[in-house]
Length: 105
Image 1 (cartoon, helix red, strand yellow):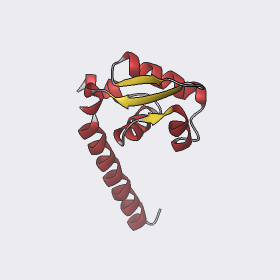
Image 2 (spheres, helix red, strand yellow; image 1 turned 60 degrees about the vertical axis):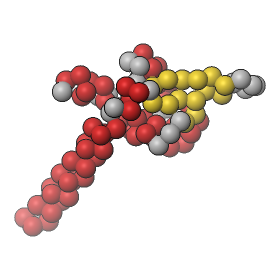
Image 3 (cartoon, helix red, strand yellow; image 1 turned 90 degrees about the horizontal axis):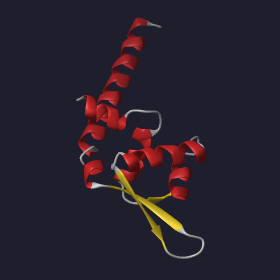
Image 4 (cartoon, one colour; image 1 turned 90 degrees about the vertical axis):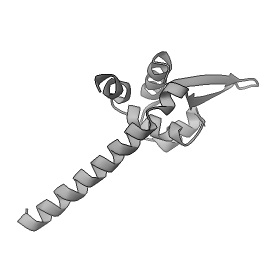
């Protein structure tokens, strides 16, 4: 359990993985999808995910060069965990919102 949680830990990591779950993305596409994430932090998170072998980056030929990021097979194994984390968070949010509404606070 700790290995799986460590893989998705860190601010922005789950959101980056969520974006890559939908298919390969360029740096610019990831920036557009997560506008509050600075380029520096995005670059750091992508580097960390690549070092952990959860994503791969492929530089495509041409000028300017174009890098595409995608989940590796190991990264793909995180999909069910991320989906369940989303469902659990959504259920908790609904429950706490409903509970607060009933108590009048």
